[in-house]
Image (tube, rainbow, N blue to C red):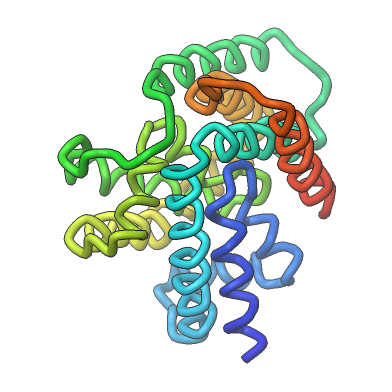
Length: 248
């Protein structure tokens, strides 16, 4: 039951841009065991955890999809605060700026700006995302999600399919969800160890690139209209992730 509850909590967290699943695994004290077991395909001990994750992702994803359709601007400004605050966790321990890191940061900003051209929000047409692109998005999001400090959902925002996946969740479009889920499983099993090695070798450069990617892709979360409620929602989202990202 405890493992299931942790999974539900993790599922809720993963949907929020800027929230790192890897950080949650570290806090739960299962990060090293999880990575080792994923590589060895020892998934049975985590069935309860993953089952809870699916429930949490579905509930949280359905709620945000509804919010996007009904309160698009209020939702994106809240998520914008979450996303920008996550830069703290991404750059944690690497605050000294070097030329190489700055170059990677600018490259991330440029790529994120280009990929985040389409604003997020509202119901989208399911034909807009190809199956291959959806599969790759699931693989990259899940693999980066496992690494502490890197928010996997930010990858979906940068790729322009964050609200698309939420729409698939809320409408239970199984064909698309199966493709995305297959990509997510492949990313966790096949890519996580490789990315962990690369991340550990070039953590500073990758952290700055990811920070730039987050900053550049945030253009997709700009509201169309502003109200007095907007700054409050932005602060709530920013504070929640800022405090969470300070956990070790």
